[in-house]
Length: 144
Ligand code: F42
Image 1: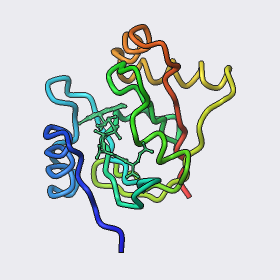
Image 2: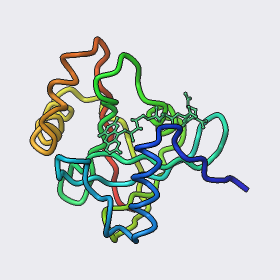
Image 3: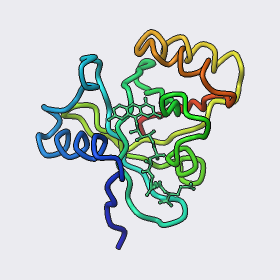
Image 4: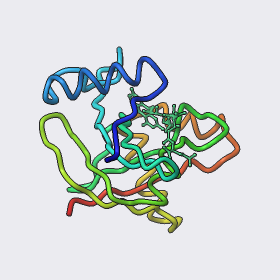
């Protein structure tokens, strides 16, 4: 059976643990910004292991927008490859956990609209895009 493998980054692993162990009542914001974070559970595309990734909460109606910014790093985060291979995820938004299906946003107009929502929710995303050559990937997660 697949097992949960925590992030190798201490601050990420700690946030996941606090978020989950409190049932979504603690550890739900990004450090000192106070901005809300969701918790995505997904499957490793090579290992098949269960991965848990905190991301900024960006909402578009009932859907969530997932932004593969990784602080403007030069490469896509590993979870982007996982979602491309297996679009089935679970998303925890504080106390609510839902099964969702993701799709990568390819259409330029749709991506521009969602990018505006993302930057409104978390302004540093705009700065991250200027720091990297890659186009930051954006996914939409839709409840099932
Ligand atoms: N990252 C973002 O990209 N966007 C955000 O909005 C965001 C917000 C955020 C808020 C709070 C917080 O605590 C963290 C936040 N992060 C945000 C950071 C985010 O949680 C991730 O740590 C970051 O995006 C990097 O993701 P990553 O998947 O690259 O994580 C690395 C460190 C990692 O876990 N690597 C694993 C490892 O063991 O090295 C591998 C993980 C993996 O999924 N492996 C796959 C497998 O099969 O298991 C293979 C993947 C492949 O390359 O094909």
